[in-house]
Length: 320
Length: 182
View 1 (cartoon, rainbow over the protein chains, first blue to last red):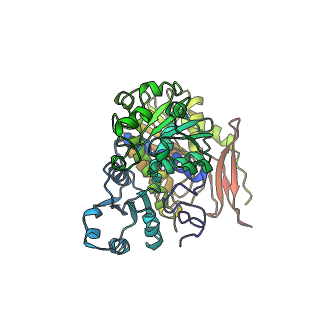
View 2: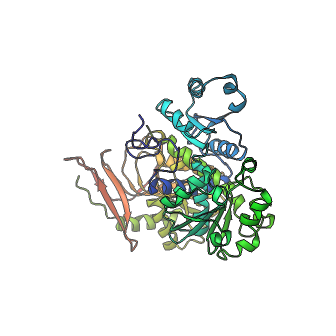
View 3: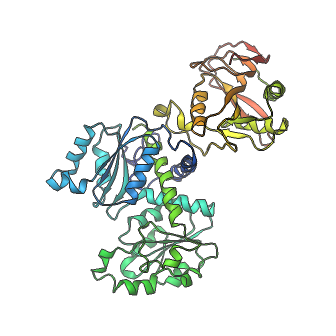
């Protein structure tokens, strides 16, 4: 039975689906980060598997292409001993005209226990969570412009790993914020975890002004945006946005908002640089910064597996 | 239930009882959380080299489906090569044996030890699996509805906490150390 208060939580306030960071209490986020910490070491063991999801079937439903996210979900589920079924939906049933809920009903009839869903439509994972059987759990792996909660959680894990604590931090999120589900989820997570200064940095066309209502400082100047920052999160500039009137050119964007070593030098000396990937070298980030000392882009990928293991095992252990 | 267990006195019995059971290469591994406190203290008091290990049962628990994943960050840390090791697991309270089963699975994810033994502060009976300690500082019979938990004060002093006592229940307690059947 889905709670009207928040469809992600059961009556005891425990996580049963992960659909969005918005509305999740700090304790739930902290529990996921703590749990991820204990899963990180599983990758270093002789036996890189634990039996928590043994006998469970996890369906990866990617209605939108993604290699990294799908692969890390697959590795996470396999390390938890689940059976993983990858469905490239974009090329199958929906192409033949089947509705989303019919697809889900068919997959449920194949005894699915968990759906990991990526969809171009915002809210698709909610719809699935509302219509699946009570024992089935749903994880949003990115829906439209709305949310990408596991990316936000692995970003929070990365920040906590390097900075220990959220309470004194300045975090700059830079780039195409208006189209970014990562930015939205990151901002909710940073707010919930008590980061005192969150900056949204980018051109007026790519930063929604209403972020100010969430307590975010909106900055249209890169120097001001990264100055004294502890964490700089660069977002991918989506090439498809170039065709519209939102940006003059990729070169122009890089000149104004690209992260170069000169810009990074304005941040704190121990600042870290993050990026959800895939990176566009020379568009939003300079190659020497992406490969440089401050970059934690590859550790983010490793932490992503542990965080996804944590989310899967927590929701699988909670009853609707 | 009228039962008084002096955790500090039992600790002394456990420590002294363990001396003849430990070889030079025996590794102490405490089961999170109470057993880990005991193992660390035993490690120091018995002058063992290196660090005591800590092991967690949470990733192998058989009640995961009902109880979910336990909260808190408690990861296994075994600061030695598990392959071929002589390991003495230490826990505070032994009851059903299910935690020990889970911990053995966890341990074998790290390698193949030569020998694994178990020592506990209190064996409270109620076994559901064939598990036996080589040493229990106390053996008591307690009803299943009664929870016995080791607590550690800031200064490190150990105490036992009893919870959910059913009214009028009785328990036979004997505080004599015993040699285990295992």
